[in-house]
Image (cartoon, rainbow, N blue to C red; front, side, top):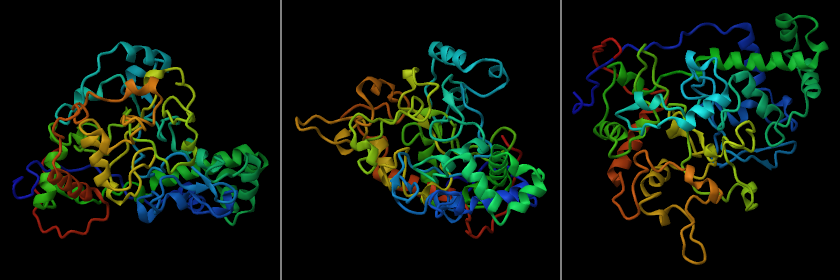
Length: 427
């Protein structure tokens, strides 16, 4: 069946229900598209999170422009807002009942003592139990809710630059949808600017949670999982290479199987990795040789600044709709999937293809991290466990096939089905 492009073990996926949006979510939709809340009056949430581009930027800029005059550069690539509705809270190790009564400091200490299981696509269950950072939102997991997440760009001077709470609350009171606030939250909602802004952020979070466009699960891969679609030979070869620890081993971090209770895969284990991607000269902040974006260690996240074993680690993003993106990794250094796969293939086997060379001819490997933090870079998990001069994990054909498979993760697939659904229970 695999040779014919079919799924030999089709499942019945438990998909999010499609219901009419609540009044709060409908208000959140109006807020999401309102540029008046920004300092420039021209930038809305939807400006960087375009619905027609999987809620990610439509352009190929490494970082987006913002600020009061739309002339200030950000410092990180803008991630998609899709498929965040199931994101767990930030924790060290799995976010479960056992960890609920343990402080983050205690979890950090436990993580330092615990043995780490090597991550491979064939042993994801064991790797999921690693006491490593996982969960949370933004590239550094510094917040846990979509309500908190919406607060960041709204007031960030490099992004929407809304000013302060009083300014935003005043704009909300003058907006065409101000009567919606009164109806939902009471006549006195605008008497307290903090309350008005908090309710606006709540409405934005409800919109992202309730609107199906943020988690549609309409890709060819979703249909294939259910036995309703057939892969092409290239897509099937790519799927197998994606799951092969001796090739891409991508599924070690980008989980591609349904959960035990039938929820569709999100193509991320939500863990954090230090990959050592090269420094991006297109980011103006990087012109300062003393500036480094250390992810979990700062500059935006501060509570783990002293936990230097996490410096350089960033959240593993979902790969759903990844083929529609134009900037990859936290610093947007790459702009094609081919470049991304080349990084995994040649980072260690032929680093001159990845990193710049110093005047003395030395390859400046891991040049986007200070020397003292480069030991944090993953050199254990395949395919990042190879040595210089060794054969790369993926051939050129493997990479072409993996890209073909990744395109099956794009939502809105219209490939004719015409296949009988032999759906078994989720395994």
